[in-house]
Length: 131
Image (cartoon, rainbow, N blue to C red):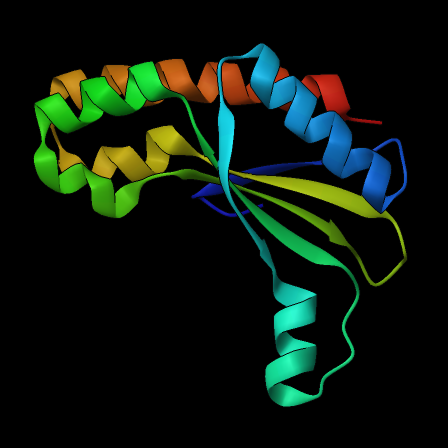
């Protein structure tokens, strides 16, 4: 595990996991603003065959507003990315950007508190979708 992310094994297949993650994010007040299909992009641009790998750009509007009010430049660190991927062993993993670690780079107490709150919400999403 890295210092900027945390992950869980999924209990379902890739498509099911994407749906479960999206629903669990919604239950915590997040919407998915962007979806990047990394495998499809690598296939189209480089001709590479890769296992499914999706990046979901998740945003909780209340928290995003608070963060932007505290520091307008923080938009460079948003949204919270969530990766759903098929690993080399064909198991599905869900990887979450750790907002406390990433937002901690801003070095403002209000942002640190916000990062910890968002981390707790994402930890609940991780628990909801984990095997």
